[in-house]
Amino acid sequence: MKPSMKANYNLNEVTMLVEGYAELVNLKSRIWVLVRLADLQLSVRRLTKVHRDAILIYGILNLDSRSAAKLLGVSHTAVLNRYAGALEQLTFIMNGGI
Image (cartoon, rainbow, N blue to C red; front, top):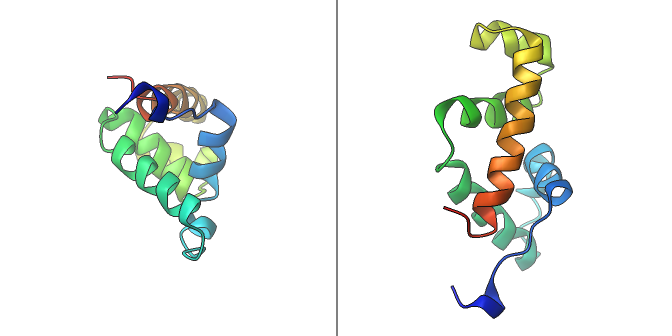
């Protein structure tokens, strides 16, 4: 990617994309939404399994932290910590980080 075309996602935008995924995926008439969702989908694949699970279960599926904790077999605090770390890593990846 050329430097002038480098993505510039901030943590708040990535959080909004993750947590609003179900709604955004239905807004197919807006090309900028599609591009951002494509970036999100490709970047989620590059996360570790622990981070990917946190993003998918707690973020995209919107399970509460206690339900996600039961599903993942960890504490609800671990879910929240993993989710926060996953958002930071996802933001890094979406901005061209390796």
